[in-house]
Amino acid sequence: MSTKRELLVDTALDLFYRFGVNSIGINEILKSSGVAKRTLYSNFGSKEALLLAALEQRHRNFIDWLGTKLKSVHDDRALIETLFEALASWFANHEPQLGDFRGCFFINTAAEFSDAQCEIAKYCHSHKLAVKTLIEQKMSQPNTLLLESICLLKEGAIVSAYMGGDIEQL
Image (cartoon, rainbow, N blue to C red; front, top):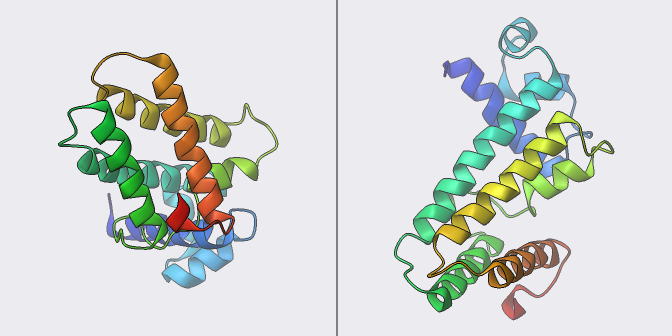
């Protein structure tokens, strides 16, 4: 990835995650990144294309982070404990790879798009499926009910922490 393209994606991801997609315009991204408008449009045809690149980057960061956290898990109890300890660490802003906690970028972004069939919403959904698959791969044996329960609790913990819940109780 070119340096300027990478800078645009990094800047967009940071601004979108902190302030929301619809609150940030292209001009703000250009001003914060110091990149010319021509460079932006030669790399991305639209704000949506830039957002998709930011979602892809956040997806890779999150999956890499979670994969590392769950790497040595070998049973379901350890999986659950390790997953929620990692989430609590993220909520407390102790995970530099993910940055300051502002909720789930994918939930936040999907909530800004009313069309569940648009490319952005579909990408957010595919991220959630990838996280679910990663968790499933760490389970000691297939158990759909346990998998669905873990994922539902994970999503609830993320939303509760973002909405001002007491992260010590999660």
